[in-house]
Image 1 (tube, helix red, strand yellow):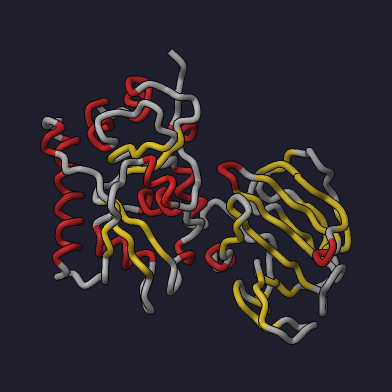
Image 2: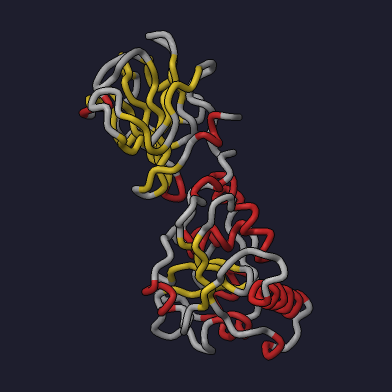
Length: 304
């Protein structure tokens, strides 16, 4: 039998209607708010408890509720942790279903999809049978079938109830998988919309700027492979590292580069020296973290 791991099955994805259709989600129910007395929220929390109890105590699969998804539009003041608490969900579920890169991905107006049970979404790209999947996740196959309309045949995406992500994936989400790329630095510009210092217009800034003296050593924030090393347009001289689980990091405006494409580096490897190359108003390091192609807020990393 082919060996499978949780990493094999997990796919970082931005939850879409196509994925939900593949999961037999049916009609998606609107969740109007996070008030704890909301009857819809009460039902979600009850279903989460029933599912967890049924699987842990190995009750018959008929004790499990049917898988349902709820759509919630993030309101002002909401945080990742507030959504987590109100719905009795867990970190792994919200990450997996919504393709989140960090807790700070939760922002006003964002649409979240919340299932009525804990678990993860994965892409069955190898068309594994339910017995193989059950063995990999150590969950009896009948519970997997119950959560997926009693059949997985022909389905690209599946929901695995009570399954967990790897420790590495969770630590990357929480920012603990990266170190600060500079020993000492002061943040001068944050992630998100800002007034462009050259055009004086509001534009999206996909990383953070860390002021430092020219020639300061720049360290790899996580082990990986050098995907790019050279001159990169507005970034000036830059290094891009490819990390596990679809993450990457970019180090821009360097004065010198010490690594070459294809080289494997460890956390803390010196990649080069800071500078003022490219589109820059002064000596600093531009630092980005991305998940797939989506920039994520590295502030959680820089605060460590």
